Structure formats: C-alpha cells, structure tokens
Length: 171
Length: 320
Image 1: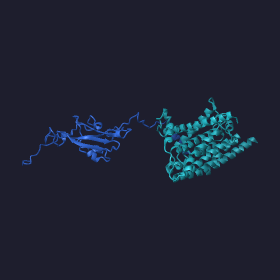
Image 2 (image 1 turned 90 degrees about the horizontal axis):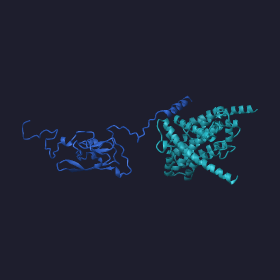
Image 3 (image 1 turned 60 degrees about the horizontal axis):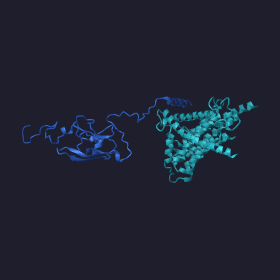
C-alpha cells in the first residue's frame, strides 16, 4: 500500500516536470559535422571537380546505389560523365566517402531528403555537386597525383622527385 | 406514451449517444496527452490546437484501415464481438442521471442495470478471443473470464452499502440522498473497493490482464484491426466513463455542487475520476493474474461483506 501511494505521488508530480520532447520541425537538431546524411560532390580550391571517376565508391557501395561513367578531358584528366546516386536505396553508411581517393564524395549533416516520388530521389551530377571544398580545404588531387596531364610532366607534381635515369650509375 | 414524448426521448437518446462517442474520442486524446506529460513527453500536439483534433484523425485512419478476419476465424462471431463490447456500455448510460430529471430512462433498478451492462462486456472479450483462433487471444479471453468472476464478486457488494443508506437502486434517488453529505465520507471502504473493482470492470491498467501487451501481445484484441478494433477501444473508454459516472452517482454526490448547474458538476466529477484512471494507469504496474484473483477473493470480498454487515447494523439500528 505504501509503495502504491509512493509511485502514485512520484508519477503524479511529473505532470509539472519539464518535458524532454524536442519539437523537431520548429527546433532543428544540432548535428555533428561528421553526421552521415545527404551525399555531395565537392570541388578543389580552383573550382574544378575533384571526382576522377575511379568507380571505387560505386564498387564499395553495399546497396549499389551509385552509378559512375568515366570520361577523359583532352589534357588527360579523368572525370565522371554521369554521376548518379539513388537516395531511395542509399543507406548512408559512408563507405563511399572512406573509399574516395580524392575526397570528392562526402556526406553532410543534411538529412531532410523525404520526397513524395521515388524518381525525384535519384540525384544526378548537377544535383550532387556543390561549389565548395567540403571537409578537406586546399586539397588538389591533380597536384599530388603521379599521373601526367597537360601542363604537368613527369616529376613535376608537388610530391614528386625528378624522374630517375636508369642508365645512370650514380646513386 | 404520446408520440411527442416518444420523439423527445428518441432525440435525447441520439444526442446522448453522439455526445458519448465524442467524449470517448476526446478522452483518448486527453489520455495520450496526460500520459505523455507524466512520462516527460508532450504527447500528440500537432493536429489542431494542442493536438485536440488528434482523435478525429485517428478515427478517420481507423475507418479507412482494412478490417480483415484471420484465416480460420469464426466470421460471424468475429464480427459480432466488437459490437457486444460497445453496445452494453452505451446502453448503461441510458439510466445515468446527469442532473435533476436529466436521465433518458430513470429505472428504479438503475444501479443493477448498469452493473449488468458492465458485466456483459466479458462476453464480447471471450467471444472475440474464441472467434479469432489465436492462442494469445484465447489466453486473454480466459483471463477475462477468470478476472470477471473475481472482480464481480465484490463490485456489487461494495456499492450495496450505499444502496442500503439511500434505500433505493434508482440513480436519482441515490444522488438525492447525498444532498448534505457525500457517501464517500460515510462509505470510504466501499468507495475504495468500488473504484478498485471499477478499474478491473473497465479493463484498465493495472488490471488489464486480458490484453496485457507485455506477455500476450494484445490478448483478445490480437487479431482485430480497423473499425472492429476501434469498437473494442470505444467500449473500453465508455466503460471507464460509465464506471466514473456510477462512482460519481454513488459516492461523489452526483450533480450536487455550488454555483454551477447540475450536469456541469456531474461532468466535472466524471472527468476528474477519468483523470485519476489515467494517473493510476501511468503509475502502477500490472499484477500477475493469480495475484489479482487472490486479492479479489481473499481480501476484497471479505472486506466488502464486512462493510455491508456494519452498514446494515447501523442502518437497521437507526431505523429501529
């Protein structure tokens, strides 16, 4: 009997206790910057797209929601001709971001992706590409990559040593 | 009975039925909000001002949902059971006196009639459980039957003290007998036993063993969906209000109260008891069902008999 009265009192006074509910559409949650939601394609500091269409993100994607088609510019850079993510399938695991060698594909904290039609959840390259650099400012893949492109011969990259002459005997 | 009187009575009944349905709907919203507040949540607050129209949205949703009987079910009984759950409760309100002369049918055996209607719901539960062809439902139905025997044993006896003191089973006479002093002050033990049994009669937590969702899914309601589920639900909420109305009439002085008109006092008292039901639901855990039955037969029934005996001595002593 005493415990009954006790729990009635303890529960009853909660009527006037402050409530823990956060009213979502009016009060937005504060999400950490590494929260995994809507996927974007970033650009390098010059405004060039970072994606080199290596297809690693599409390969690692556990639900196969990424479709990439490679093309090549005249100066030798690879770029994606199409880059399509089906957000109706995406599970926001972030594997694509981990797999990306150029920091092109990144996940952002924007989770409000709901839509009335499935077709409008398929995002193409213009929908995915953003103007900024995302989480890796100052990173230019083509400066550090070993691949030869127009205007950057062998050994001229930022981290490259001059090419070795195999016929020279000096160390 | 003249045609005019008959029409008047029919109109009053329809208005009462409509009001009861709306009251049951509003009650579901109040219950969800109050339960939310007691659990540090807000509860439904989106549809309409303060979420008040939530019950309308719920009703529309339930009407549009598929109402399918499971394979192997006894279809006729399956469809009939929810009606048996709601109709006796609505009928029971026919004899309740909401104010001086405010009763659809002020029967001279009103209290007994309400008790009978309250007891009838157990048929709905057992029938629905049997018709569902579901083991969980069957367990729930069996518990409903066992629990009914347990609480009915002292529900009737607990209010017999009041009937002795008022000298009548008629609702309006019982209220009129409380003009000066409410019977809850003269019959505290009877009132406590009555409300305990009332919780069980309305199948509310902590005595909702027949649908206890933690161990038997939803008991007798397991297979029900759509509008037949809603009828069981309606029956439960109207049962709570019926028990509250009966409690108000028997122990809280019915429509008596200062300043405000009688029916409003009656409504306020019924609402307060309903709130207490929600509070008890939020606060108390569900007992094992042998514990409830043991309590009913070994503690509550002897107490109710003792209460009746002592009240009888006093009433006879005063008369003599």
